[in-house]
Image 1 (cartoon, helix red, strand yellow):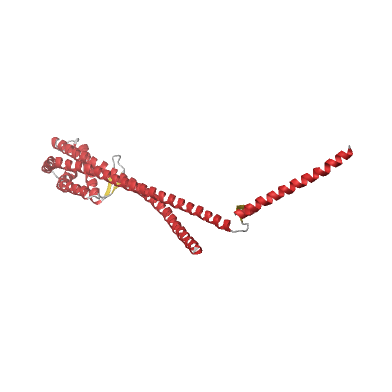
Image 2 (tube, rainbow, N blue to C red):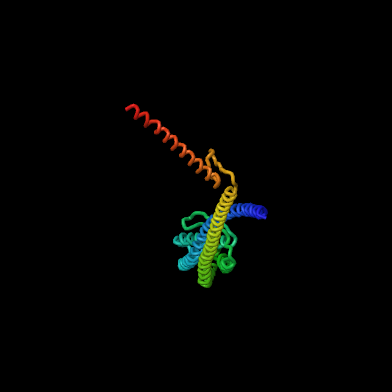
Length: 295
């Protein structure tokens, strides 16, 4: 019965040891997964913030460009045709028109526009439904307005076309400005939402990493407890053996001895010292008579 229980206990220990090894390996793999996930989230968040910052900056610039186009159109209306002052104003209107039109196209379909320093930048389409709806609404207002402004820039239209462009600008300017304000606010809110989502995922990854660490420590402590149990079991087994048993480790060093061996060692030590004492007494017994005879 005792042998059966011992065999069953040994099988249970071996089974748990194999399971704990697999759990430890799984914990290491999960730790790496959580680390790579956190790094990937940080990388993705940095890219999204960079992209959204470009969209927010350009959407804010669109508000200024709508006002700038209205100003230049009103200036052209007030000046007489053929005056030299018309050239710089038309050039300013053309630059404003080009920036506004390319940016609106980029918001919807993607494309290339220029930043505030005149550098060419690639603009990706807006992704969220709300932002795209605002951009499409602005585009629908811009299309009829665009044709009239383009006629004024190319010089194909006379005073009638200029009057029509000014009329459309005065009619749609505030609505277009409102849509650009709403688009800017929506892009800012979308960036904040995405940042909150990423922080939530990062917090979850941190909690899972802590749980993974706790599981790893629990496995380590359990295996340490099993090692102590096995050592105690070995001590009990060798102590039940009537003969002396020595456990030798690396470099032939004695690491453990049973109780019988300890008794033998103490008995052998006692016999050694008894023999030494007897030899010492016999030596001095021989020396003292010889010393007395010499005197």
